[in-house]
Amino acid sequence: MFSFRHLYLLHRASVCMRQSVLRLSQRIPLEQHPCPQFANIRLLSTNPDNASMPNKQSVTREETIGPDTKKSNYSKAEKPDLKIVQCLTQIMKSNRKVDKHDPEEVYKVLSDGNKTVDKQQKLQALISVLDSAILKGDVHSQKHIEILMTCQEFRELLSAVSDSIPIYSRNDLLLLLSCHLDFQILRKNIQAKSDIMENLLSNLNKLNISSLIKLHRTTKQLRQPEMENKVMNNIGSRWMEIEKVNDLMSIMQMITPEMRKTLDSSIQDGLEEKTLQKVEQLSTEQIGQVLEFLSVARRRNLPLIKSLAYCLKQKGLENFSLKMTASVFESLSKLNIQDNELLHLLSAHTVQIAKDSRKSIQLLTLILNCCAHLKWMTPDLEKLLHSYYPRFSESINHKFQCQAIANMSTLQCLQESDKEITLATLESLNEKNIRQEYWLFVALALGWNNWSVEWITASVLKESSVENIQRRFPSMVTHLRQIDYEASIAIPNYMGPRLNIGGQKSSKVTMHNTVVFEVIEATQTLEKNFDENVQTGINTPQGHVIDVMVLVDKTGKVIPFSSSESSCHKVAIKVVKYENTIRPSMKPTGEIQMWKRHMESLGYKTVLIPYHIWTGFRGKTSKLMYLEKTISSSVA
Image (cartoon, rainbow, N blue to C red):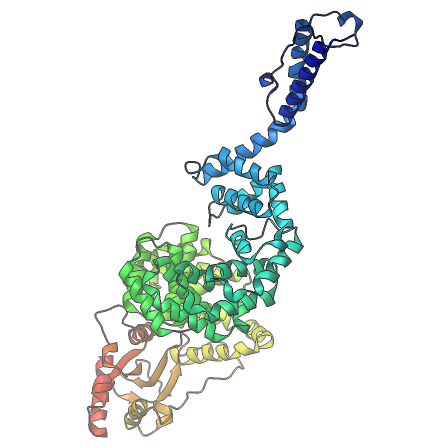
């Protein structure tokens, strides 16, 4: 029989045991649990041998069993705790946020968010954890979120927030957007996405520009073109509200080529106007991005382009990479902008930072292509490209090898020492059976110098190649005619294959071009037979135009083209309409000087007739005397 005193002690013991069990659920190690001993109370046992065991020994035996029990019961409770703290510590160290926030405090916020019932507090806890641990705008933010997703506590909080999205207000959803999650963590919850989109799309005018940019990214991830266009149109109609330069650059990057087909042109007009207002705040890299945007969109906004070029020249190119330099070259080429000062700056920077690597050579070939299109080159850049010319065949593919040879020829960068390298490259390309149009491209650019004739006649104008081009590429027959015509007028006693592709007839210059017409009229007086002694409007393979061409003997007298005299000279006459385009001290000096270099490389004697001099003569006699004098001096 128990006395009342014993019953009271048993009650106290049961209360202490209940408290100990509650402490177990709070993950307190077993060694820290109080185990009070009460007088005259023994632990019961089913073993008769232990029935009379003293209380102290029984407790000791239970304590010896405790460590095994701890390993089996507490390992699952401690590992998630340690795991998420370690995850937070690792992420915050990589983001350099460990000095600003304590990982254990961040975990406490996460734990409290899981325990609370209030949906608003759960959202605030999620946002607080992400803002404390994830670095906004970091390229590794998505990777860090995936690391957090491996922790059960974070997944539970995120799931609770996802399930409560329908009850959140617009401001709450904007807070969720500000977490930089980009909805990747909600990719499994389609209903949550739909609820957010339905709520935000109905309130577009109430969102600011930054929120609209985030919303546009979300619609793009959801692959909803209609929603994407709706958000983009709203942004475009509110271009005057754009204040941040980063927002402006983000909007430009959002416009894809597919979107431009249906996008209202007024939106791009507004973005360009805002860029013009913010042009002084742009960095050099951002200026390059804007130029690329304009070139891809084929929008030749001259006021904006001139402002961008001015700012780029003022800021300098100290931190400009070769890739960015090539991008600016390409943009200027596509927009056909010839800013000599900017091109000189870009060329000097290219010479300074170019390296002997495969990637660098590939970028140099891109710059070479842009210079050929702009018909512009500096001596230093020409020297650099010429030094890397033997490496082109190792660094670029077949198409770009043909393009590089053609561009070097167009810019007159090839020298006699490059003959073996060029012919060896062409021979190796010929063995690889590259496309016929690439051959034509190279042939048109090389022209008819003293070491390309044999290759052109043997590879391009051979009968099998011509038949193949006529059969498979009818649109390229015109180029064949041009090559054949160039051969007939550029090579004395041309004995190439007689192909049934016809000859290109010289075109008569129209009457509206009074300057050229007066030159033709004066030249016509040299000999009565106009058709035999004067050719006009001749197009060279490189795209240059000869206004007037005549054949002149040693004495400077114009003779018919049918003449059999071997010591004659072909004289190409070009009318220069602006006085300031002739600058012999510069190399090159624009299109006119490039034309002169090209004609001289083909064996022509050149005559440049400035407009202001030609119009200064009164009467045909004085003009004729001027022509005779300039033609005679050109062959002297």
